[in-house]
Image (cartoon, rainbow over the protein chains, first blue to last red):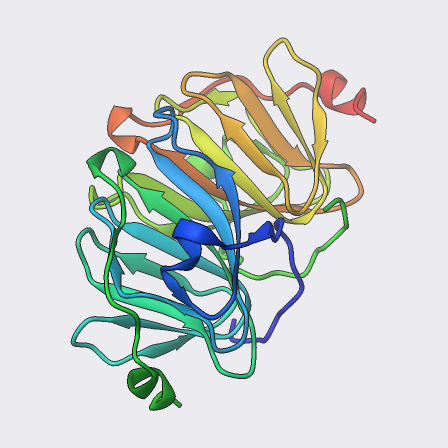
Length: 138
Length: 138
């Protein structure tokens, strides 16, 4: 399914600012679709990374699934090679796995996230992905 | 976000047959994206209903979220009015809520599902949506 699709399906939301924005390098848009409330024990949202934007290294205590709907990006687990991600890709992130994701340099990335088992605690945010690490990707 | 989008993003999968097919009226395509394995305590998949196709009335003991990515369809909870659903819509189905979903008569419907809290047990399938009920929708 490796086509480039930048057509939005789900609401784009707002530009991240304040406490959310500090976990990103570059500009990101966030829209929460399912809030944490206990009924579904997950949160779901839509994320759009502008070209070059990525989140900091981080971990989810209950795991997360990414469902890529538009653009082109990168996903990397700690101590593994980064891999390109495209619309139609499903990224399965086990609990407590250090990782980051974001757009390529010349294209946005849009994905849904499903953060699972949210009763296990909040996302643990860590250091930014360095310019050196990001600029090596191709 | 009420545009008509029939362009597939996620894998379409296979035509449902056997034990899954019996829970549908008409032709449906299913692709499991995240299988039940305990790690994420949810299952995720892609469903494409051909025009006129719908599933039987059913309940999820742990709830479910639908994320509509293409086409046009119907969603109805027991004892409530059916409502049209479109790409970009997010349908939140609480645990043990009797409901059905499917395509309109003249267009496919494609949605992702996130079936949550799957440790609470399997989907409970019930009677088909009658021709009378379905044909009244407009």
